Image (tube, rainbow over all chains, first blue to last red; front, top):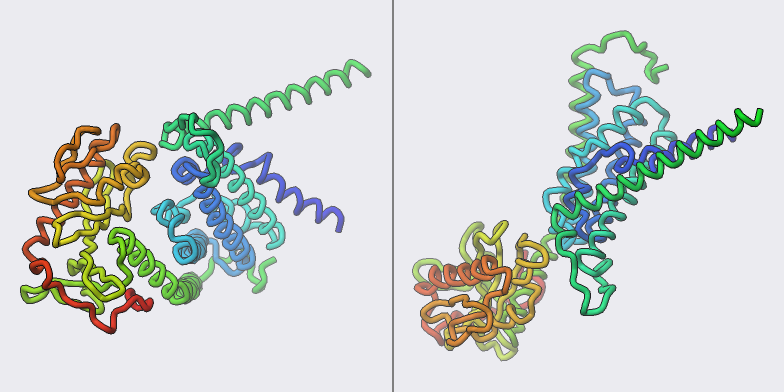
Length: 216
Length: 227
């Protein structure tokens, strides 16, 4: 029992850090770059993707033994598209302003390779509990990545976070950050940091191994 | 391994494939119709409220509104304008006096279509308010057409005769001129052009001042505007 809990915890945590969909797998770049010009948009997009990914993984995993593998991709797409439509109408009804800002990128969640990728690589092969944990982890990782980009871009490009001004009147916003190039710049810097960290960690582990060897 | 006792190697019959997809499609269809029906009233109400708020914003002092359409060579009040039928909104104050028209207009901006609503006072022949409803202008530059209070405020008493002209910032000298936004000349000119075009399209259809259609009893601001 203990071991199984560890496994589901692992499936959850890997999506947030080690296999983060954006920083490690570099998936879902289209919404990542397009709608992260403010923290609110980023969270709305992350939330919608979260809902779609977790819902689809749950259904795909639950029905994995009933779906013949010849038509599995079509079935995944039907399931994903249904959840996307639900998310689309819900956002339109609850937060019309955010829905307007996100525009075409909500229907485009269907085409997010992160979601279909998780169905094919994980949910269709593993028990429901693990599939849901995996989806929760991946979706949280995606949400965190979107938010970190959105927050950085809004702070630098608009001098605000969640629409609240952070600086005095003298702050001259760095407008390029909320334009498309700002998305690439921010993502590039974050990826650089992520890879540098990974590199340092590997180096550290190597040093430890070496020290152990010479100690013997 | 499989729940229905099949082995992985047996190829499923075509019927099974068709059935699987048909059932998936059916369930999906039911779910989508369900969510559409559930959210439709809220979405319609939101849109109607947004429109009413915009009309009240561009026509100061207005508390009631009704859609007006041009049919049989005259402007008449309707409950529900036809689909794709050009429409303007008549704004009335508490005493049910006509205040002005709220005129929707749309046209190409710098990046995408700009949709706006402006208030028109037919007696003074002036634009008395302007609100951008939809635009994708450049953040920080073009979006000043609705964020810059000076520019938006410039539409509070702007003569439409012979037509509105956007001039370089600080050089406004006539009643029909408005200061363009520095760094967003194209967007400012687009707004002016949209208003001029809408004005030209409607000028023949609007009745002479004083002969506007009176407000119809059934169309007060009782939340029914969008139904």
